[in-house]
Amino acid sequence: MPHFPKPYADRVAKLRVPGLFVLIATFAWLARPSAASLAWGVPVSVIGLAIRAWAAGHLAKNQQLAQSGPYAFTRNPLYIGTLLMALGMVIAARSVCLALVFAAVFLLIYLPVIELEEQHLRHLFPEYATYSQQVPALWPRFSGSGNGRFEGRLYWKNQEYRALLGFLAGLGWLIWRAL
Image (cartoon, rainbow, N blue to C red):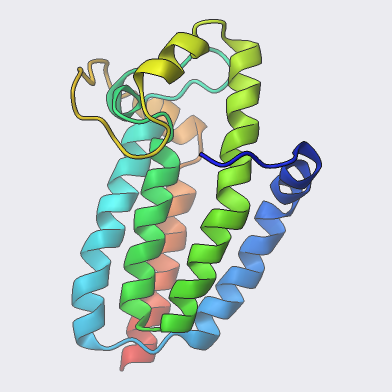
């Protein structure tokens, strides 16, 4: 994974949430969905949403290093899920410009944020060094075991339902635009 200067990564981390509103406006403006694009894109987004939900049910933020569930296969399943959700929405929106915008956002915003989070986890959990050597950052490694129980209370505590609500709002917009 590329290395980003800390001042850049810090600035990007602060702009991530406000930047989401710019992305939503861009998405709404550039989307040109059709029934076929929805049929192809929605399942991809649903898979991403399911990965995010699965990950959230195994994540006790800043209390315990998540190594079960999808964290046994990739250190960043929430970002993998986000990437798949966005990819599905871009497919559904049927816009090359939107695809380029989302690719740039992932490369210029999410990768530096992932790097900052990894630094934080290394500081918080001494066992993170070993974990990071055994489990890839993004591309999943399907050897090993995803043991561990999904905890619904963690799903709610991590407010993952917001991703579902955002997806449903975006899907509603796309369906309305396709009509």
